[in-house]
Length: 310
Image 1 (cartoon, rainbow, N blue to C red):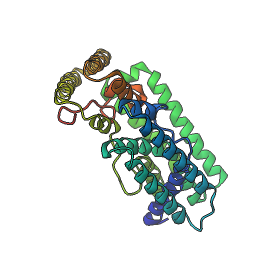
Image 2 (cartoon, helix red, strand yellow):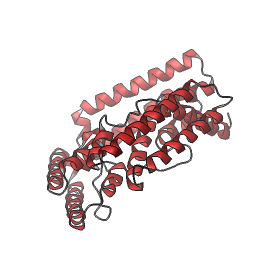
Image 3 (cartoon, helix red, strand yellow):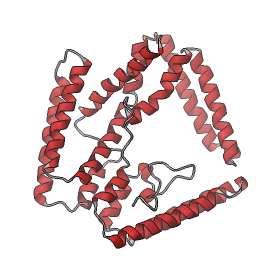
């Protein structure tokens, strides 16, 4: 199969999965209740809350109707979904400001990424017309990879240092690649490995919105609060940088001290933000890490605000 055909099938698969996720009536986010916590942090008036409730209800009803409607092509369905989203965004513009709408856009972006997982993979495999034996082999390889990862997490001896972890992960990926090679071509494997990036960013490479930074910006904090957040973030970054330079043999102590640093950062935010603001910030932090605290194995969207970004 030609490379351009593989790329096209991935794009079409994404659009199919995206329209399915857009039609979901509950609009799930990465964390249940995040949207309500965010609304609460904005101190919206009763009128604004009622307007949002009515607009969201109308939007969900429109998407449900589109989901049940027949279309001549995937592109036609996609265009109808885009038009419904455009109308909804115009309605939100009458209630919320630009910063607030960007936060909600980031939540919807997360939800779409979550809901397209699986649907995108299934659509892609359908486009390759794999037989039942091949599909079963792929399912078996994925389950084996999950078992191997679970065993690795519980193998403390293999996790003594970052070097050992990297080597162990590299070995698992090599084994998984060998299993996939028995079923798929090299080009198909490459496209399959690209799925995670397509699911997150979409076929046009649109970068994900950092919901937490957008949320903080939407509050229009006073200068003193902004300076205090910058100072707390700077202190945390300095501590993390020092801990990353520790000897690999001290990984266990390093993880413990990183947790302490994140906890101290969270306590600092308690003195800067209101309870509603802190609750909203926690609600959109992935894996329920306290208010933007980073994981020990690297920064992601949970990383604390950089000193110049708050």
